[in-house]
Length: 130
Image (cartoon, rainbow, N blue to C red):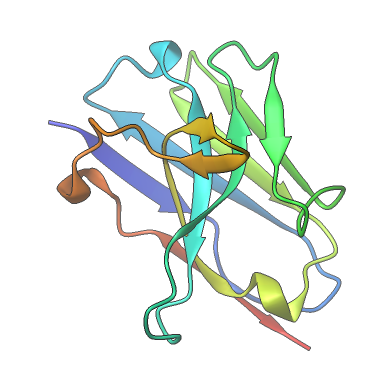
């Protein structure tokens, strides 16, 4: 059974930095491209959006424009852990952050169709005060 546990989220001030972590068990982590996603549950109807992507071998990364230059994704395959270094945080970065296998489709970071909805972890909440 797949288990995903995200951690590292907290409340910070705009301009601060955070490092999120995600540990994955129950799947062959090294064989998957991975991504970070975020969702703002306080905004009804707002879809979970892919924020950053990293290939299984860390040779390829991708970021949405709004976080480019501020966020850095990385991974440790031996530890089955995914990271997201978030610098110069903005109010707009406030969200619950999740990790999952990922791929890029027409410039959008999405989960593969095989990723079941009940595989998502609880996420880790990041709150940025302006």
